[in-house]
Length: 598
Image (tube, rainbow, N blue to C red; front, side):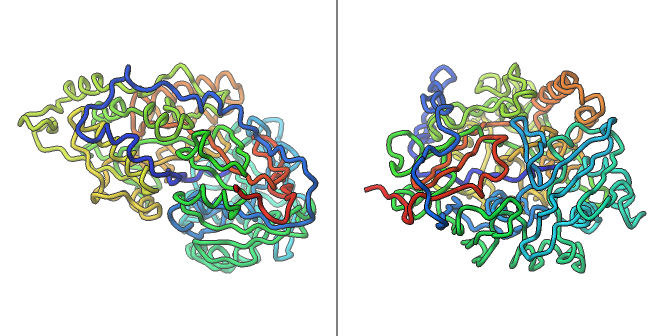
C-alpha cells in the first residue's frame, strides 16, 4: 500500500537545447564511451543546494503565493489520491489532500501527522489513530469509517484506478471482498470513530512506509457507484480534502485558486492562499524573473548556474524517481487481474532488449541536456533508498560494441546490406518507440535515442512519427496498444521501497507486462515476515535488482536531481525528506509583492 502514492512522472520539463545532441543525429557517428563527457560540475555541486529557504526577513500576515505547475499540457483534473495517476494532478492534490502520515528520513511512518500507527507484537496487526481534530473541508470529521471506505473502494471489483495490488491483497478478507464473496473486508475493523484496526495475512515490512494513507469521505461518495467515482463531481469539479488549503475556484487543467483552511487540525496555515497555474516550460525562466510565480519545480535542462534567475533561491534534493525504457511483452488480463506475456511479441527476445540498453549513451544525455542533474541509472531501486540500492550493479552502461555482439548472437543481422538488421527469421524489423512530448528537448532526446539504436543497426521509429501528448501516451500504454513496441517513461517511486506495485505480475502499473516466477518470488520475499530483518531484505532486493537487469523488461536510464526555484520573498519552505509534516502550511511571505529581476 502506497503512503506517498507511486505516480507517473514524465519528462515534460525541457527547454530548447536541440543543438546539443544534433551532431549525434546529423550523420556523424555517436561518440564512443571514451569520448563521452565526464559528469559535469553541476552534479558535483548539487549537494550544496540548500534544502530550506534561507530568508530570515520578518514575515507579513497572510499573503498569497503563486505556484507554477510546469507542464506543456493541462493537468488532467483527477483530483483525488485514490483515482489520480499523473504527477501534474498530484501537484494540485498536495495542497488540499495530503497523506495522513508523517515520515522520517528513511520514509518510515512516524508520529506527528494527521494519524499515527502502532503495530502488534507479531507485526500482523496495525492500528491507525486519526487525529481528533482532523476534519474535511466541508466541516465533517474525518472518521475511521472514511478510512475504511477508501479500502473498500480500492478493493471493489468495479474500481477503475491503479492502486489495487498485492499489498492490498495481503489484508485479511480483501480477496474475498474483491471477488464479491463478502460484503465487507473482514480484516479491517472500526475500533471507534477515529481508530481502525487492520489485520494482515502475513507481516509486511512495507507497511512501515507504505500503508495506504488517504481516507475517502463516505458521506460524499457513499451513494456514487464505484465505477463512476473517478469521473464524479467530487473528484473532477468540487474536490474536498482536509489539508492546509481548500479549493476556492478552479479552471480544470489550467489553474486552481486555494484559500487557507482555517480549521486545519494543526492550525491555520500562515498564507492566506495559493494561486496555482500551469506554466509552459518554455516561459518558466521569464515567469520567475518577472515574479509571476513564487515556487516551481525547475527544469533540469535549464539549470546551468549562469543564466538562471537571480531573484530566486534554488533548493535541491535527490528526486524519488527515475527515467526508464520499457518493452511491451504482453497484455494485462483484466478478468484475471494479471499480466500475460506473449512469447511471440516483437520484443520478447532478451538479447534484443539488452542490446537496446547498451546502445544508449545516457551519460551524454544527463550531462549535456540536464547539466549533470540527471545521471545514468543502474538499477530500479533508486539511490535515495540508501539501505537497499545496490551500487555494485553497473546496469546498462554505454557499450555499442557489446550491443552489436548481442544482436549478432541472437540472429539479428543485416542480410540485405542496407545497414539495418533483419529479425532472426530474415524479416524486415521496424520497432515502434513511444515517447512523450515536452518541448524541443524531448524531441532531441528521442531522436538521440533513435540514432543510438540506428548506430547498432536497429530501425527504431517514433510511434506515428511524432511525440505523444502525456495523457494519450499513458492511455495507449495502459491499454497495451499493439502499435507500441518500446516506450520511454518515468516513475515516481513513492516512499515505499517495495517495487511489487510496479513490477509484480498482478500490478496494473506493470506496463511491460513482464511475468516471471522468480520475479514474483523475490517480490513476495521482500515483504515477507523474514524481511523485517533488514539484512535479509537487502539481500532479497539485491537479487531482484540483478534479476531485472538480466531480464531487461525495462531498463533504467536516468536518475534525477530535483531543483526547486523559490522567490526570495518566500520564507520557511523546507523540502528535507523526513522534515516537517506541515511544510506547505508553514510557508510565509516577507513582502506583499514578489521580488523581480531587474
